[in-house]
Amino acid sequence: MGASSGIGREVALLLLADGWHLGLSARRMEPLLEIKTLAPERVEVMAIDVTQSDAGDLLLTLIQRMDGIDLYFHASGIGHQNRTLDPDIEMRTMDTNAIGFTRMIGTAYRYFAERGEGHIVAITSIAGTKGLGPAPAYSATKALQSTYLQALEQQAHQRNLPIRITDIRPGFVDTALLRGDFHYPMLMRPESVARDIVRSIHHRHHIRIIDLRYRILTFFWRLVPNWLWRRMRL
Image (cartoon, rainbow, N blue to C red; front, side, top):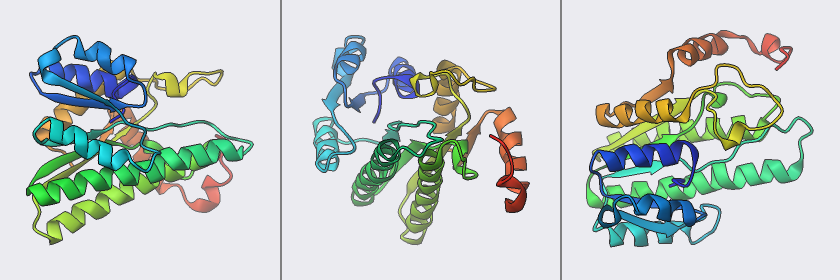
């Protein structure tokens, strides 16, 4: 889900090169059809907008066309700086990263619960570690995503369901989401992030922070007390 650009597209290309049979979805069909031309017999495509109420049903239709799936990979998301708290930006972010995320991850989880096993992998972000003033809705929805995945992992264990959950938390990645006037530090290439994600899929990690620099950064972020955090200039 979200295979039309950025990290989602790069992961799709790597999995396709590994011989996977893929079901690709995003709002835009053209980029998905470009990938399909690389291996038409192993790629199914469908236009799905996660903010629409029928998105879960469409995902199940795509799964049926593929005769079932073993892995659901969620890369759909948006993110913007919003220092003036523009309401349209906040609500679009919530619609995609919170409601849309819950809709699609929930659909995949219920499918795997009925099937008896499966693997859910989702891209969240290190932005969910602390509330970031420059991007309130983005950091809040990323915290929601990680907490939701953690809750599903606990529920699956309690229900004795062999459903693996992998939470991928990248730092700043050089994709269209971060293009603009602001200079982001420690930018990573989507190709290298995608390779790390594919390794994490194969190793069935629970949580993967990409890369070492960001693992160190988030460790210290968690140690900053609230009275100091709210005074920090970001």
